[in-house]
Figure 1 (cartoon, rainbow, N blue to C red):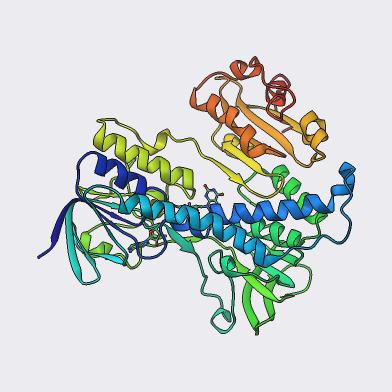
Figure 2 (tube, rainbow, N blue to C red):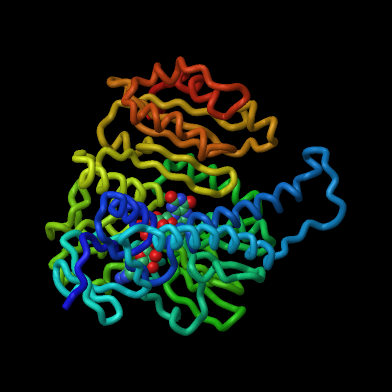
Length: 460
Ligand SMILES: Cc1cc2nc3c(=O)[nH]c(=O)nc-3n(C[C@H](O)[C@H](O)[C@H](O)COP(=O)(O)OP(=O)(O)OC[C@H]3O[C@@H](n4cnc5c(N)ncnc54)[C@H](O)[C@@H]3O)c2cc1C
């Protein structure tokens, strides 16, 4: 005999808890099932703890640069990893506890702390108990992808999750993967005092960005002393605790990259392989993501998939937006769709990269006739005053419609400044609207209208 609810939410990540709150407020009885840590990746092993650690790394960096600002730091700047971890843990813990407390306080909501698996389309098993509901919402997220690489089973390696337990400094951290996760950990550990080598099989870092952005990022990180092995595919690892070797297939350079610790940052895999989706008749794509339509409905009526497990976004803000779409359509009679969303994200190295919409390369591929504006951060007053002039800003506009297609702000405050471009895109306003806006001085954003006044066709 199964226990019947109006709705079951599997996974308490970035969409499930907010959805449970709305369903509860609508008077529904709900079961929320979480097998590990409330708040999921963002709260425990992703955004929140990494940004807390990035802040510690920034403090160390600024302390070393204190003399540039006329400030004397007497003595060697050192980093206490135990205190860095304790600070990070306190921030994560508070968020995790808050999520759990909120869920446990919801009216007509039962919280189960166990793994959930489908028995049938509308029936789920939790610790041997059957629960059923007409509406089931999957918010099961993703985990670090561990490739089937020879040697991995014989060494100790790190992922974004196990990095969270480190309270000592690796002497030499080798990172496989030169994209967002690898670069954030790379720069922070370099600033904490580790030697860092990043191994990337592609020809450049963060290959989805325009080449000038990739190269500006590499310049910043190389200046801080990070080593790079590009065009180098890790094919095998070997070693023992404290002495690991990545064997790389490369055109030039040594085929061996040696270090004391190895971090795998080569992508994510959805947590859909042990969910009993076959018993429910819910289909997945070839990479394991739950197949959903524009309203995040799976191919089984009454089952939705939200957040990273649906492959429609790999960010906290996209997971939260999934909650908004599903809740509005279900409870408010709205017709919101995931395709209304404009891609946007941040890369939290220092300076940060704020991104919205298409890159120049994507805009060209889609056949747009484009105008491009750019400005180095050396010509941004706010950056000069802060002594942080690394990076550049770039905006891509459709020459015919005059709508903004995309932008990259790689520079101090870039994660915030990008939003004026993003909001203009959501408003579908022609770029002169933003060009004529009067922004506050001195800010990074005040140069965005200026850039739009200097648009030109790209070189080729
Ligand atoms: C190092 C790192 C840094 C990041 N930084 C950022 C950032 O700065 N900004 C940003 O927007 N995004 C960032 N992300 C991505 C972001 O963390 C994720 O996209 C986001 O957390 C996904 O949310 P979600 O709700 O889809 O899943 P999750 O947050 O992963 O939650 C899924 C939950 O489901 C539970 N679960 C899974 N299977 C079951 C089951 N069968 N039964 C019961 N429970 C189950 C899991 O335990 C988990 O708690 C980062 C990710 C990483 C790895």
